[in-house]
Image (tube, rainbow, N blue to C red; front, side, top):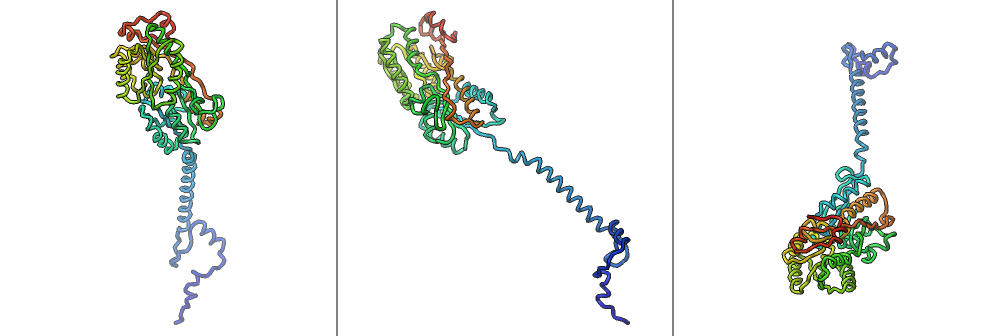
Length: 374
């Protein structure tokens, strides 16, 4: 019996003779001889081709999905604004700020986010609040009030700052000039030097009152000094005696009114200060309790029961600040945006309060009032 060589036994398996056309056709059709040597046809090549095609189809589908998602993945995060107020939250002013943003093409919650912080009149908190906003990497800081603007400028020379305040920003060192602010800060200034006009209106209502007082916040020295200087000059020209009463917290406000009674003060001018605005219910209530006629900076005091208010429309200033903030988000440089001046003045008289105080408002004053609350 002949012994079969290994090479002979494996011959068909390892030899590579040239295939005939018929063999090639059978391969294309998936009919090749079984590796087991049984002679039966198999379709493993065709299955492999189908699997490859399925895999190619899946890869193509995955590629299409990734291509569709890629633009969304590459979108820049929504810019964030840091809104920092010196006093308590003022919904009307925030609403006005949002209107200004929308005029510039930005809607909160859709294409911009806003972080709101309020110092509640505690100005020593402002440096930490500004630091928090910087840590949050806000694109713009909106600083409402003199203390806030000064704290923001001291904290950063790179993040754009938009302020709203009621004193000359050049005089307190915030900007180099109104037309060319320079640096990273610009904003809106409420028509300044209105403290003297408030005293004139109060004197017109009470011409026989020789002594008047000014309530100021010593923790806001830049603002207090400007208003005190202006009022001293006005009092001198009107032949009035001026008493300055400092107050920086609720307890000191109570003490100031007690002092006012001791000094026999006949009328009061409350300086425009965010802290006083946040405490307007207390101040208006004390003025009513002590029967002291008073004039304030903003209409919120008149709607809370104050006798008279004379000052710039803070809502209009907030709207303009919103417009400037939107421009900066679009790429404008603060140094190239001149400081705007909000010139819309509101003179409001609360007739109900005047009757409670036993005062008759002259027709000349009523005729000049923008609003009379009855």
